[in-house]
Structure formats: C-alpha cells, structure tokens
Amino acid sequence: MAPYNVGNSQLRLAPSGSLEIYQLERRWSEHLPMSPVEGCPTVFQAICSLTPGLHQYKFFVDGEWRHDERQPSVTGNYGIVNTVLLAREPDPFPANLIPETHGSRSNMDVDNDAFQRVVTLSDGTLQEAAPRISEADIQLSRHRVSVFLSTHTAYELLPESGKVIALDINLPVKQAFHILYEQGIPVAPLWDFYKGQFVGVLSALDFILILRELGNHGSNLTEEELETHTISAWKEGKMKVRQIDGNARPFQRHLIHAGPFDSLKDLALKILQNEVATVPIIHSSSPDGSFPQLLHLASLSGILKCICRHFRHSSGSLPILQQPISAIPLGTWVPKIGESNGRPLAMLRPRASLSSALSLLVQAQVSSIPIVDDNDSLLDIYSRSDITALAKDRAYAQIHLDEMSVHQALQLGQDANPSFGFFNGQRCQMCLRSDPLHKVMERLANPGVRRLVIVEAGSKRVEGIISLSDVFRFLLG
Image (cartoon, rainbow, N blue to C red; front, top):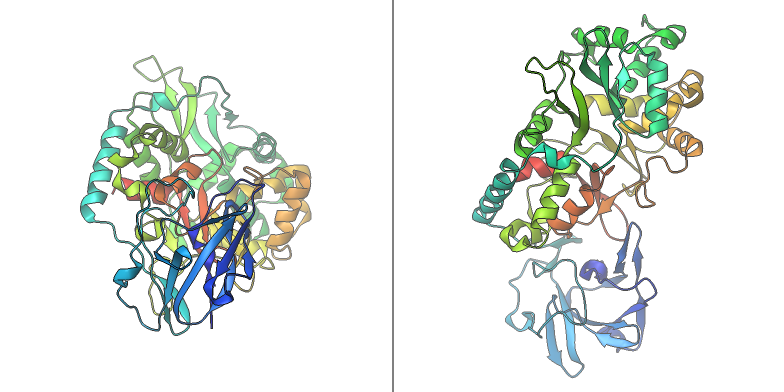
C-alpha cells in the first residue's frame, strides 16, 4: 500500500467550513477529515493509504456532496465521482476517465486549474505527470513582459509618501548596524559629506563579513576597534581583493544606481547583472550630477508588483501565468534520485553552527538557507538580514559563532524582537509545486518577501526554492 495525498485538489473553503472525503472502498460510509496545510491555510489535505489500481472518491463540504470538476471523474451509481489511478508503470490515461465538463466552476475553487494528473507508482514512489508548456508560449509571454518593462520607468516605483534612510560614511560600523536593525531594513545607501555624493551601500552581508573577521584569530580587527571603526574604514579594507574561503574576489568600487527615468527593464537587468538586492534611485538636476537627491531604493519586488498589477486583469495575454511552477524551468529544486543538478539546494539542520550558516551564505552566494529536520521538513529559514539582530545590545560581542547554533541565533533574534522577519504572521513563506506562476509572483511582489520555499503538502518536506531573481531571469530570458 502506498500513501496518497488527496490534498492535491487544493480546495479553498471559508475558515469556518468543514471538509471530509469519502471513498468507494469504504462503502461511502467512513470519512477522512481534511485539515488545512500548515503555511497554506486555504489548502486542505488528507493522507490515506491506497493500493495500486483505480480508486473513486467524493468530497463532503459543509453538509453537501461535491466532486472536483477539474480532476478526472466518472458518472455511475453514486453520481459523479472523482477518480485516481495508481499503477506500477506509467499508463496512458483511460478514455473513460477524461474529466467531464459540467459548466462553470460554481461549486468548487481549485488552485491547479491547468492540467490533468496521472499518479503512477514507480519503485514505491509516487510521481506526478507534469504538464508541458510550449516554447512558443514562453517566448510570447517573455516578449510581452519585455515590452511592458521597456515602456515604463523607475519613476513609477516611487511611493506617494515614505522615507529613505541613508548613513554617513564616517558613522561607526557598530552604530550603523544597530540603525539597520532598529529600522528593520537590510541595506542603506552611504553618503560622503566631503564628496557631496552617495558612494555605496551598507548591507547585512557587510555585517556577516565583519563578524567572520572578528571570529578569525589572525584578524587585525578587534571588538574594541569595532566600537570606533567607521564604515569608510571598513569599505576601504573591503575594496581590496581579499581572500574569502580561498576565492579571490574583487568588490565593487562604485555605486550601482539608476535614475527615475530609466526603464524598468534596464533597472531589473542592472540588479540581476550586479547581483545586488536594491538599487538607489538618484536624481540630480545639475548636468555634473551635483546635489543628488535620493528618491527611492528600488528592488525586484517593486518591479514585480508593477508586472502583476498590469497583467492582473489580462492574464490571458501571458500564457505562462496559469502554469504550475513545476512545469516551468524556474528556481532551484532538490534533485531526484538519479538526477544531476548543477546548483544544489543549500539546507541546514537547526543544530548547525551559526558559523557554518554564515559561511554557506557567503560561499553559495545565496540570501537565505532553509532550516530542516532530519526528514528535510521545513522548520525555519535563516536569511542574511537575520544577522542584524546580533547588533542589538552588542550581542555579537557575547557569543562565539562556532558555539552558537542556527536555532539559538534565530531564537535570539525573535526574543529581541518577536515580529522581526515575519510577514503575514509567518517567517517562512511557502508554496506548493502545483501553485500557478501568477500566485507565486503575487506573493513575491509583497515587500519583505524575497523567496518562497517549495514544500510538499502535509509533510512540509522541502522540494525547492524560488527567489525574486529566479523569476526575473526566467521572465527576461
């Protein structure tokens, strides 16, 4: 017998509703209660064991019998019932199991609209037949996104009101990171008073490199010096080609910025090509660029929000939007047995040291790492921005990176600020492999959400991760 997750239908119900599933094998008398998936409150699931063969099932929703109109179904003695076929080898879908059309979607809202599914059993492992999207649809969608981004400017990203925080380059590093933490921002532009211009940015990655420098016994930087060490002094040392874990890597010597009239496409490409999270939007009315004004910090999430808003009511013009993310070459996925993956997905156990987490963030050049249990089920996520929590009350001076675990570091940050790193009440933003691309894009367009962890419904086993940069690399080809 094999476990089968009947939650793949992903039924949406009101929070107060109830949902049960009945099977023919149980003579339609015994039911399996369905419960919301953790992290996906609108998705209900139930897990049961089924033998290979054809199985029939129906849903009992708030006292009413229903079936899933978008899944295979047949009509028989018990009315319209859904079916699922479990076979030892992949078989063609039987003609009598083709979903029937019953008018509009009046009685059930299903997330995974776009495809039929055959479940097969291969060496005891359940597999889904993923839908295929044509190259023509991909190219058409990319062209229309490119046209939109090319004809709209960074000026449209500017909010009606808000604040932008910049730091003086002569500010002590310790004080600067305390400001980042208190303001809840991961990055801030740097202002040089003597040059009269913006000269760079300070980010959470700088703090990570500084903490690793402090932990290096051969370092010339001491905790006492950190109290007075200025941002300017740190940047001057960082500009030199330094050895980071054996890899010589030159750092940027100039500020990556854009103007308010640059196109959104040029802005997105500038972020991707320079591998930065944000780009300051700076305007100067003088021909020589003097007296610059910092207008905004642009990010991919803001650009993605413009795309979602523009195509929200004309999603049919982008064929890829309705496709499940599993059918699109998008993101980093955990390789299946026998598959090769050029870019392995970095994950850590909660007992791993904070030192190993920081090293992995730098070496893998990623902004976050899923924290999983021994079954690879998602527990939490550690991001670069989480490191700024150690700036509060000089916590960095009271710990040893090799001795503190990732779990302890996350707990320390949450104890200091219970809402730090949370969005909509959750630290880990998740999605399912069956979620359509438009749903993933809408979530990533929210400020503060830079990636979604793809999990298996029910077990929360990590299957992959999709970042903002992944989406834009796909959309821009």
